[in-house]
Length: 118
Figure 1 (cartoon, rainbow, N blue to C red):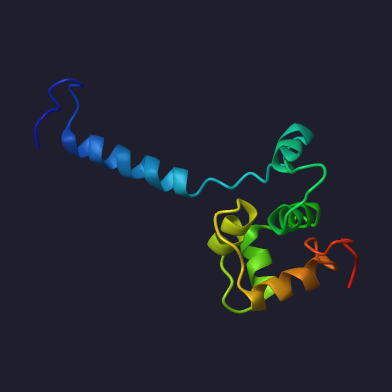
Figure 2: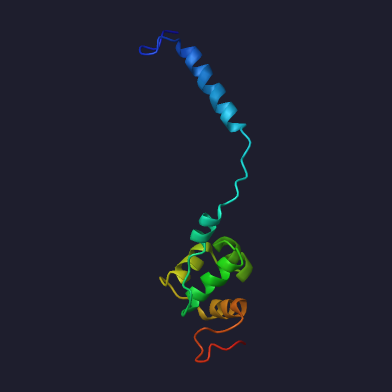
């Protein structure tokens, strides 16, 4: 094998070095970082007085520290992370069966005139 034109080192040695680095990086332990209070605060962004079903859903999800995926699993069959995200951002609205599940999860119907509990 020849020399690398810029570095002046053999290609084979360069290849072995690259493989060694990849193996060592792959074996590095994962660092369990705790989020700082500032980061947690940024993640908890929601309206202080939610009005819509999506806003109430987001507030309760964040207060319970649920991811969208976990909430979708919790609410039941046919729900996806994408659906939850669209409801929270008012891009789509839930079908009636899904709406009933969301209202049960929230414990009240935000669209009722009194906003009363069930």
